[in-house]
Structures are given as structure tokens and as C-alpha cells.
Image 1 (tube, rainbow, N blue to C red):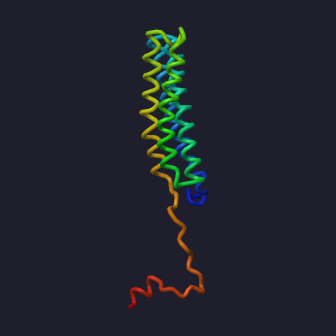
Image 2 (tube, helix red, strand yellow; image 1 turned 180 degrees about the horizontal axis):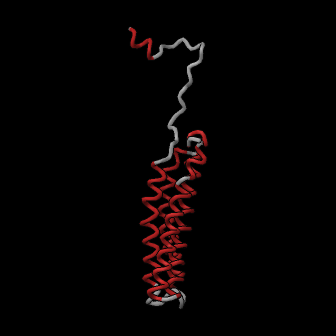
Image 3 (spheres, rainbow, N blue to C red; image 1 turned 90 degrees about the vertical axis):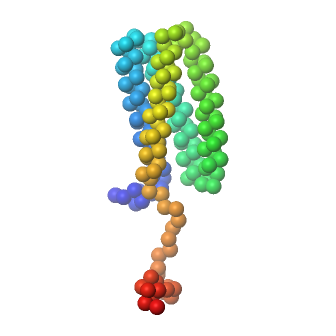
Length: 159
């Protein structure tokens, strides 16, 4: 079944599936690497930073996709506002996570912030690739009916 046959609502969901999957794979790799090299607290920090990043990015992408489906003219404005809100949410979340004893230690903070940066760097191209591969028609072309008396391409070439 082609993507056009599935409908535009499923086409708009593709970036909301591919990008989080790639980002969560990055979180898993970072957590494993942190556990092997620095211990369990570092792995916890890597998971916390990655999950915060994925949640914030999914919420922002979901909000923009919803607005693009309902009111396409406002999607650019909502995307810009969402980007600013995502930055604020990330700063607040990281500030509150590193305020404690476990995730605020000197050996955990680099894993927390490094995984967050890796998630964003993996999310961006995955989201871009998924968005570019969407098949969303820009407009609906009218279908020529048998009663249509307008010129066709074949008529235009004969003249």
C-alpha cells in the first residue's frame, strides 16, 4: 500500500516514529558505554539525559505535527515557539536533575549532558530524513470528468 493511500495522518506520524527510535538507540548505546566505563550512576545519568531529550523532542514534534495537520498556515509560528519552549524545558529539566546528589556528581554530569547532546544530534537527521520522505500532496488536482469541455494536453498539442 502506498503512503498516499494510507492517508496524510499516517504520513505525518513517520517522523514521530523514526526519530525517537534512533534517539532511543543512542540512549541505549550511551547507557551501556557509561555502565562499562564509569559504573551504574553514570549509566543512570546517561539514561536520564537521553530520556529527557527524547521526551522534550517528541512533545515538540508532536505539537508541530498536530498543528500542521489542523492549521497548516500556523505551523511555522508554532514550530518556532515550540523550539524556544523546548530550550527552556531542557534547561529547567537539566537544572533540576543535576541539583540532586546522584545525578549532580562530577562523574555523572558529563554522561547526562553528553547523552542529551548525542540524542539531539541523532534526532535531527533522523527527523529530517523521515520528513523529507513523506508523500504529502500539496494540493488536490481535479479529476477530468466525462462532461468536462476544457482543453486537454492532447488538444493543446494539436493546435
